[in-house]
Length: 598
Image (tube, rainbow, N blue to C red; front, side, top):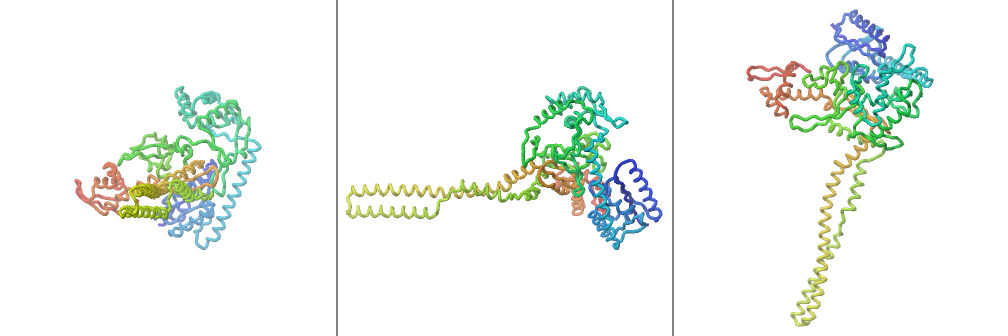
């Protein structure tokens, strides 16, 4: 029987689209039954088809194309799978390469290589349709924003509610708490304000304590003084990402909603926050606020849930070294959502379904090494050569430190010294032969000795300079090496970090956005993914068992530099997966590695 999977998608999560998606799933299942096939899996999601970004089910299907899980992929029509020409051809290439087939039940036909041209044209038309639709929607949004016809008020906007007639009203009980926040902000930071609110028993709409970030968002948002700011962000169809709009293009409506605090109060509170945050510095005609306690503070954001990344510490078991990691705020508060990625025995945060985050952690040392590699790409855009900077610094230092006397001068001094010694010997011979008197000898000898002593002193200085030159050359070599390995590298990295506006973290890549310059994408290897790293550790254990079937958990722990408990845990996981078996009992026997893959 032909093994089949279905892929169903709708563009949005609106109620009408949800019903359409349910109907699409029913139609797909009916088509599987009608063809007499066997349904083995379903890939269903509510996401835009213009890109594969953030489409988890599509990515899962794309990866499964390389497995032996199914034979046929069933979809409604081509545009349900993809509206991007490049991604369409990538999907078809992997589909054909792995011997899979694609069935479109609306047309009641399989995709064949003969259809490559027509389906390619369809993909181009679908992409152009999406592009045109995106432009129309963006223009319609901006027109409504300029006219100020209606304002979208998120349901969770604290202090306000939207009435049935679409007007916006103040929730007075919540407004009292907001006014207290603005009053305290004159002399307190957001963390202390949150503590005061907690001690006074104030809670948000869902009965939760106010966190520091929630207080900061409330005070920063000008809606509390009646001002609505729109068009701050724009989704770029070509780049497939949301971009910040220049401040001069923002659409500002003052007095658009009832004010909870006066504009003067709002400005004073925000000015106080700015003063506490640090001084401003200007670069490339853009104003940036000074960084927090660390170079990356406030810059790393989760690409999955939107939360900030916080700097944390842990101690490594094998050598008790301190490891610095950046972790998503929602992971630290609520743990992970995916039960396969969670470790219940290690959980410290309360598990609340839908509140956690499954994104990766970033080990700071490895992250800096990764960012160093991106420095060259970043500075190439500005025509800056780091090696040229290093060579210039070394040449300047060499002029200051290395002063070498010419070798000809040393040879000339040695010749003069030898000549003076010869003259003194001849003077002695004349004394012995009775040619000169004792008085003349003493007078001339004193003159020769003084000249000889001066020449020897000058030679000693030159030789010392030569020795110092050799030491200076060695010193310059060390300085050049340190410049290359440490100082220049750190200076360039520090400069690049200062120019980073934000860093979005995804499971397989980072997106760096700079104050000035293009967006930079950096791929991540498996070292950053917890699941991939743990799988690599288990693969090493399997390799040990293949090489030595009698190996013990204690020996594995010593090889891996881990505790015996950790080694037993990894072995237990491999046994649960059916990847290894132990033939024997009482601690005597051998390991057998099965052919089952993970």
